[in-house]
Amino acid sequence: MDDEQRLPVRRRGRGPAAVKAGPPEVMAFAHHLRGLQDALGLTQDELARKLHVSPSTLSRHLAGERVPEREMVRDIYILAGESADLDYPDGDFAASLEMLYLAKKHKDPLIHRVWVGELAQKSLENEILATKARISDLRQELRDERMARQEAEEKLGSLTAAPTAEKRNLLEELEVLRCERDEARAKIHELEDEIRQFQALLPLLQEDQKRVEEAHRRTAQELARHHEEPTDAVSELDESSDAILRAEDLYNNGDTREGDELLLAHMSELDPGRSLGIIDDLRDRDRYAAAHRLLVEMAERRPVGYVVDLLLLLADMESETDVRTIFRGASRGRRGVEFARFVNAVSENRKLPISSEEVLSEFARMFEVERVLEAYPFMDRSLRADLLEVAFSQWHTYGIATVIDWIVENDPEFKWRAIIVAREACNSRGNNKELRKDLMLHGWGRSDASVVLPSKD
Image 1 (tube, rainbow, N blue to C red):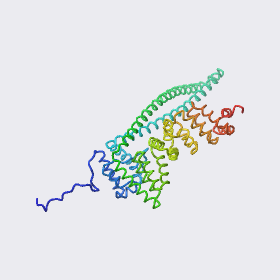
Image 2: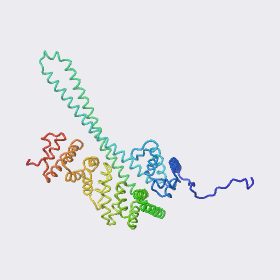
Image 3: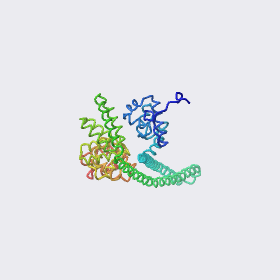
Image 4: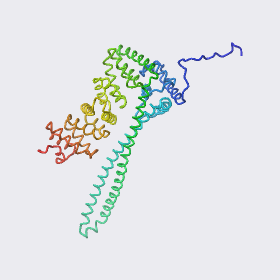
């Protein structure tokens, strides 16, 4: 072949389309990510801007050099106008997450283990909650069956005591009542057995939960140690500087929310220490309001372990104002299991400059019955009394009555402790009679509701 006829040689180099070969799972996800970008019809710069990440970061994800966080994939689906719930993924989004998990496993195994641990925790929490609900339903069904048996036995007793002449006319009704009684007895035995099985299952699930939480904690510690190593420190510093400069432009143009989201997306890939470095940089630029907003957002959005690490770092820096900002944001931004996990973590860590009582007091001040009852079942038992004390000291009597009524039904072992706490809280304000009245509005009899009155009443 003549020289003129030879095909041009593609020179080696790193252009926009150059893709390094990596693990097949990582490259498969990078290819999938490029497909999602093409489906949106956006250039890399346009997509990076909408995702609030730097173009260089997105380029590495698209090339398979890095594997993104779950939130980036979620945001891409949201840009496409599709459903994308990380807690309950379905359809194409669920398939994308499955590919992402495989890629993360081969690229960042520690982070993948953290993700898997979080999924296992949520699964066990949901199963424990469902088991408790099932036990409660079965107990109600058992009460109904016992009442049905009692009614059948009472009717049988009255018919059996009837004169012999009348009994001959009531033989069919007697037989029906005996069948109803026997069926109720059989159902009661069946329900009691089912309740025993679920009650035996519950502590086993709770033991599994503790093991998973411990494994998750150890993995998070190992990941934190890994992030302390100085690998890629220079490139991360460059990316942080780039992110801050781009956020500055947005702030100057009045795009406050976009600037915050850009920095939050960047900090989602950083450890707590480097994230606080960005906060300090913003303050050096007189962006105090932005620094405060980002601290609150991090406290509300990031996992409990991350927030506790932030608090420990700030405690070492003796930054009491930032500590208060973080713990208020963490209290406000969490519901149910997540809030309970945060309070449990605070109570277990003696190095923190705040106490679980302070967190509970802030929580009770900001929220009322619904939010408290969401968290209550997942809190350590020692903290439940603390929660009731701070809540009852601040709430109106109807809210207190609602919680007591709920506890009697769902946590009967804690019933008298709750009543005593409520009585003492109302004693100090002199509104015990109002509490009794509100309990009666919840269906309590006057005699039962009077347990909240002082002894002199």
